[in-house]
Image 1 (cartoon, one colour):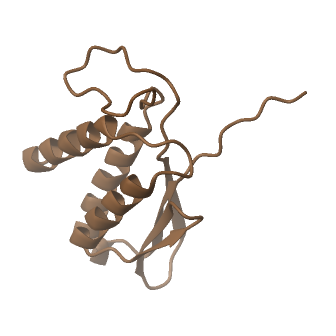
Image 2: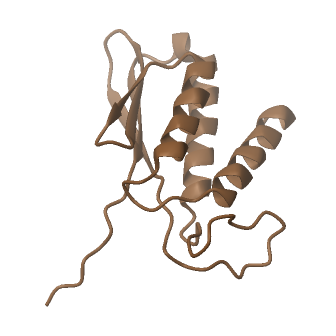
Length: 135
């Protein structure tokens, strides 16, 4: 992987880690992802308030869908990382900050070779619905 892309993805992950949002409140995260997709020239649309679907397409061929959750959890961070959550009581304890960063990395690489990829690739950035305990 290109060193610049690696450094950018590390920066994205740390940015997202420091500014976590709970499910269906990922408005800043969604705007950030949309800005990244715009920079890559990948068309996208907002769905379900904070979800995003981005699409690369080149003629006939298979459709591949890649998905990344975006939400954080209502947990106080005690990880000791040098880039901790700046939002009291919320953190990316589930790794969704990494999911988003990796998916943006894949989108970056695939957009750079989009003329070589037949078919459609959709990138779904999903607000994850919290699990509800059954009675």
